[in-house]
Length: 291
Ligand SMILES: Nc1nc2c(ncn2[C@@H]2O[C@H](COP(=O)(O)OP(=O)(O)O)[C@@H](O)[C@H]2O)c(=O)[nH]1
Ligand SMILES: [Mg+2]
Ligand SMILES: [Zn+2]
Image (cartoon, rainbow, N blue to C red; front, side, top):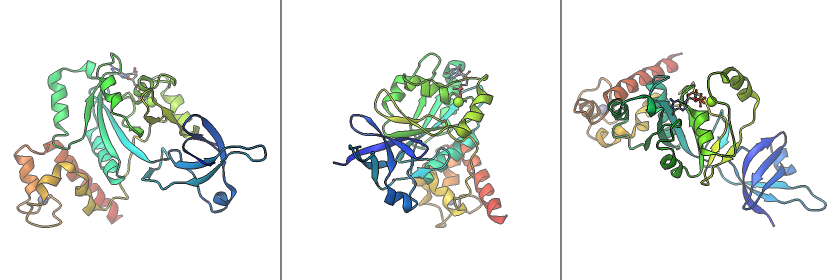
């Protein structure tokens, strides 16, 4: 009798659950409510459809693989880190923070460089090199002329959340991916958007190709408070290959002698800029701890 589904939206004390063939609006079963359990958008659930005598209900929430706050979503497969090649010029420190955050939550990061219509190939190649040997997929696209969008779209399975500076094209990307849903984009709506995003509920949009995407483009400011300083270097896949050859176990790849990560930076196997930003983040985390 019960069916499997996924919560795509919360509306007051109701939840819209997408099952195989339809969306069922349900309440949380009384027992679970009493236990103080709070369902999240993205949760896999078991629902009991409505009968003559009973409304539809969520009977059980299946284990979550991860969840994030703001937007509050669970079971995220991809964090799509969006930057613009130009306008605004890339905030690479924010990009690195988002990549670290994704690693921390066990979410696969995907880099998207939008607005490539505004730059030359040479510039784009230099930008791509910032993420040298990270192994992260990187899609150069232009929503305006459609370049690269189809290829990127095919790649999106499961639940994806967009992140990045304001103005990089997050809303434009969602519009390009989901024909059924149009968000406001551009300068004029900025003020409006801000007000609305604080009140509007999170909703999963079903993409034309089957994946799902969160409709409120997420955070642009990010604190890494919850990550311990020693753990930061674990979040850099481009360091992994080298660090077993550092002289000290637990090397922070900072001032220590015989650091293989620093050598790799000098030999051009790790991006110099990314390494320098790593040191900035390391220092930030050390400061946070002192306060
Ligand atoms: N030149 C160019 N402009 C774009 C592209 N994608 C989006 N924009 C413009 O960038 C501005 C900000 O886009 P928006 O989607 O609102 O960004 P958001 O703040 O990240 O949601 C809008 O004026 C868009 O028309 C692109 O590929 N090329
Ligand atoms: Mg937007
Ligand atoms: Zn080292």
